[in-house]
Amino acid sequence: MEDARRWSVTYTKHVKQKRKVYQDGFVELQSSSHRVVLYDDCEKLLDSRFVKMDDVVRSGETLTFGVLILLTLGILKENRNLNLI
Image 1 (cartoon, rainbow, N blue to C red):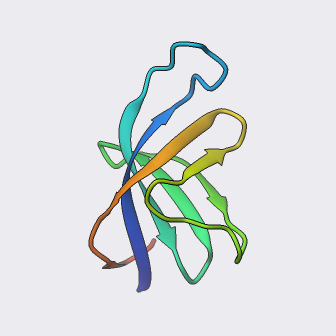
Image 2 (cartoon, rainbow, N blue to C red):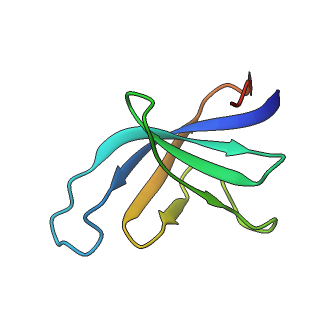
């Protein structure tokens, strides 16, 4: 079991386009491994990355996954204990 925090997000793969198309999803921050995981709204895994200890992960912040996906953190959902496979 691992403690994780979850935010609703909007994300786009169209980072360099003038007119971006945003989609809904959510992000989980797994505190023990310092890993941020991006899921779409159907809970399909899209991408993940590790964050540094001094990186800020909170509502209103923008994160970049690789060079393709940019997202804005929305509302922090309830803290959950999750079983990770």
